[in-house]
Amino acid sequence: MMRDPRKAWLRAASLGIMMFLYLPIAVLVVYSFNAAKLSTAWQGLSLQWYALLARDHALLVALQNSLLIAAVSTAIATLLGVSAAVGIERLPWRRRTWLDGAFLLPLVMPEVMMGVALLLFFVLIKMPLGLLTVTIGHAVFNVPVVTMIVRARLRKLDPHLEEAARDLGATPWQAFRRVTLPLVRPSVIGAALLAFTVSLDDFVVTFFTAGPGATTLPLKVYSMIKTGISPEINALSAMLVVVSMALVGLSLVMQRTNEK
Amino acid sequence: MIRRSMGFRISHYHQITKSPKHAWLAAVLCVASLLACQPAPEDGRKPAPKAGQATLYYFTWSDYVGPELLEEFERQTGAKVVVDTFSSNEELLAKLQSGASGYDVIVPSDFMVAVMMKQGLLAELDPAKIPNAQQLVGALATLPVDPEHRFSVPYLWGTVGIGYDSSVIPTPPDSWAVLWDKRYEGKISMLNDQREVFGAVLRLMGQSMNSRDPAVIEAAKARLLEQKPLVKTYTSDHFDQLLASGEVVLAHGWGGPVARAMALKPSIKYIVPKEGATIWADCLVIPRTSRNKELAMQFINYLMDRDVAARTSERLLFASASRGAMALVAAGVQNNPAVYPDEAALGHLEWMLDVGDALRSYDRGWTELKMK
Image (tube, rainbow over all chains, first blue to last red; front, side, top):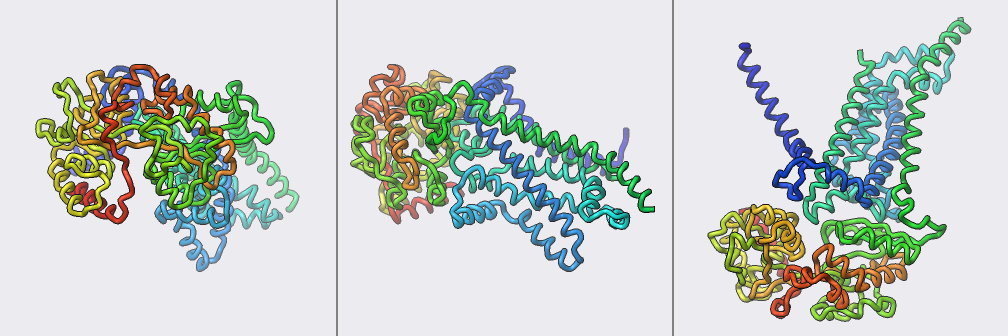
């Protein structure tokens, strides 16, 4: 088929970019099935690294920490983020722009600054570093994420729907609970899934806020590299990639439903 | 009018809430199962946690302690051990300095012990509570940074030398000069550690690796710049893999990883150059902020127990500081010069010390080397 040469060029460029983005991940996943202990030589298919992974107690503890932190911080961030989104959308325009900036700032601020700031804050209030401080840290950077996503959905809603509910005798809470919330639910779930993923993957903020007994999976992987890159890390990373991609995909699907 | 709308709302309400109820149920189940799975991996393998059970927080290098050794300690004392891992001395220092650390036992390297002592971060040890620390191998009996072991107990130690592939380099090298041999261009790896890299060239020049003389450091830098085209990579993390896979045939590095490469490729050998090399030790210390110093000392004593220390040494392929352990270590490990340096090598090893303001000269030289 003959096509517009500009289109062909575009296709090649996008293919190149996709390769650039995903080839390293593909190599990582492929080598997690390598039978050899050396990550540089291929010696046939094997699942031994996954088996080793399943028996590694320290890794499993790190996984538990990661899941627990992600679940709790997502719950907190969703609760605060949705409330903030609803609140901000109802504000008059002038005050809203001010808050827009305040909520956007944590997203554009270098993560390392947020990490240091949180660490200093926890030291200042003499809060011992541990699972709790990491959870709080994750909730902090996840609130703006949730707020952004939910606000985008709220803005598309017809404001008259809630007004109609109020007209028909619903209390503000009832109107929110039975009209607004069901309408934005897909975006709330999508935002929560995304927040969960971000929390699961986070290194920088975790690094600064982690204390005794709060080693998460990314921290663990980082310290494991010091004693040589074992294919066990490949196996672990491959699983993380799959889980993260699934969650992000699910998040996107949830955000798109109801968008007609 | 109102009645009708109410009816509408109620019927609608049922429709709408059907799925969120399930969603919430699923979410609750998720969290519940997460919480439920928390103690699961420990079931049956560890004694049930008792009320008020003491917990020891151990902050160490990744993979530095075998899980079975921890379980043994937990069985003996009824205490629970929580292990976290760090990847560099600097990271460890940063955590400790943040003032919010709750660790009971940490494992800094010798030079970092000096830094921590100077900053008053360490608790003084009670020798009576750590009897196993009295029997140290000769090379470690006095540590220059803490000669009387008031704050630190040397745990694992070794040398920095050259790992090489004897199938490519048949005549065993004996000098740092081999790292400047043009025949091995692109097949050499150096540590990604400024003091160690400068240390190697300083020893080759017949100087101390702790030299503070700017002219000497400048001359050392010139030799490193001359060597750079031959170097494939500066890495501290995976030179053992590069050696074993044949990507490099000469690697400047710690003996332990080289010994691990030997297991993968038997033609790998290790030497401590005749000009002398670094001796290092990772030490067990207790941060001043530890809330459980008694248990911490008990733990240090346990790790220094000759049986425990010998098993650790065999697994990690680093030398144990315990004199008793050396005799118990398998012969293959004991005779491996990458793990336990021989008498000849022991004679000209040097500890890396704080060089004060001269560090800036090293910093500048290192930056220049990496930029070019």
